[in-house]
Length: 387
Ligand code: GLA
Image (cartoon, rainbow, N blue to C red; front, side, top):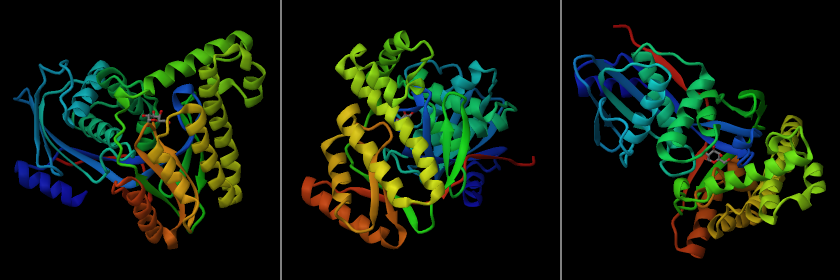
């Protein structure tokens, strides 16, 4: 943070009034369960987005310098309902709109952003930006929300401004992540219900298939509709069912004939993912890493067969992981339809493992995959500077 603040001060010739940093996240287990009010295991990563701001009360223009690209994003406070611009400003404007809906009042400002969260790598760089910008702007303009409501505001950017009907996982994990722990979140009550250790000696490795996942144009929203229509039909059989979260694997199979084949497949994925998350909590507490790794493989298989949000490239990355020493589990992570896989790997073998997977992937597809060995970082934080 210190370097970033120095850069800000040098660039704007004045110190920031407030700053915040927010990490990217990894979805560890619990795929497409969040918007079904289910359970997810996730963690914040060490990579963060930083945002610092100084209000300029006499201006109605907002200027944000991105230190990563050198790009200056400028927009006017009077002009924020237009279609989103095709750059990072979309997330900032979207967040300001969500904050305004909740009562925030802005003047113009000068701001800077810097991030080492990889872009388009399934680590939620967009949620990190929304969260960091929201928290810093909130602090600078004297506007507060509860931490869960900050996550909802970030989700609102995706839902209302960008057209993706995503759940709360990404922003929630960026805000509630805990250093060196996997958090287990309940997306009905919107809270962290457990924190679980990752046994020493293991790390999560991200391997990016480099096949872009543009979730807005993908089947993400359609999957969500399939889940909702499955839940509605199951509610006619089981009145206590509000979402797929309320359905057990047995209940689902008993009512299988009430659903279309597609609804049944999508529901099988979500219902069993929730069940796997519960199992994983016990397994992680017992420290049985091989068993935990197997759940990651099971999750991927269900994505491939039931939810159909995998791709040949993601399948290949998961398949190859079985034959390279060091790895005990792998799966696609996040929305799917491209994007990334996460691999649970012995840390002493992680670097060699990554080289070998990437070499195999290159030979198979011709694509040079990116890889990241991830540490588990802490959640978002805000800093207010004395004036
Ligand atoms: C994306 C969405 C999340 C979640 C995951 C799938 O990352 O933004 O809300 O639905 O996909 O689990």
